[in-house]
Image (cartoon, rainbow, N blue to C red; front, side, top):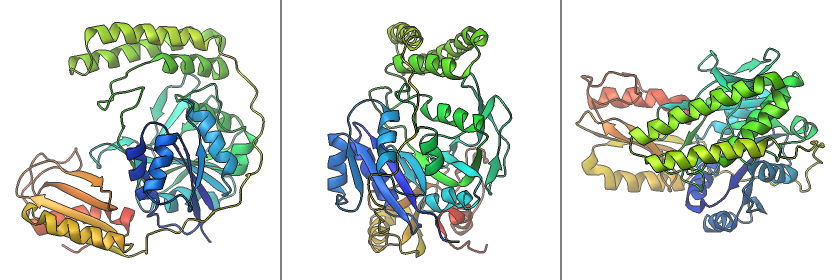
Length: 414
């Protein structure tokens, strides 16, 4: 069966450089039928121009700090059968769209969510979770390699992460898209709850993976310590009004505040916040919770059909997949070689391994190269032994095997 047409919507605000890297990854998807929609402020639209993609993708100017409105504006011009969402501080693996959209070949699947990799490029930040009427998520046990289609029990939903999710456009439109009462927090969770209430099926797709860096913003520092909690508090109150029985709301608020307080103290202990920051952030959270209790809640009318025709993006990926590897002394030559091959459309994984026990890290460069660095004897997955006895060749084979399915590399024999 042919790949479904898919519109990838990226919302960007105050993150031009980060958006550029997202676009580098999106331009190299191993998928034949996709378009890219960028909803962005001036900095984001400048990033599109710097990548010389202005005529190849759809752009929607929008600078308001409301991701729900922005996503609805993106959906309004999205003409694909499926609408996928990724954040402007995330980079997709080349097979991301192929895996994420595959479950939609089943007509009863209305949504899909993939796994999210954290800043070291290896450890998972988010896997599979369900969520309840208080917004609290709980891990789900799913097959780690194959998609699992789920219909949650009453009162719960399958949670999709905003930086790695997709919806059948007809269902998304019927449900009214995203609720603008959520400025950025719990917007996707609210949609998950509405999907579950309508008994729609959501697929969890472990092989649909994106790397999420948590770029700094007006809401959080690069360290992930919060700058402000007002909208988080307001969105919590809105969510509870939408989904939680009235007699359970105060306990839900108390539990939430206690959890946030523990997180704030952890940030302070780690040196990311000062005591005066805690006082201010606690006050802002309380003010937001109170404001959300009276925030106007509007009906969500259905979204219209796309206002623009489908604009197919010509992927830069040719389908060729190569690996390059060497020691740090050869990094300049290897990086130049890798960049040249990536410019030609190859999916390139570059391994620069030193004779040390350094932990491994993975990043995608602005040349479109997946670069992994670390020690021959060091950890890649953080649950591995701290040090292992192995050779360069065996370690390289192990790391290629770990990412082979994501980048279509051939698994080497030991």
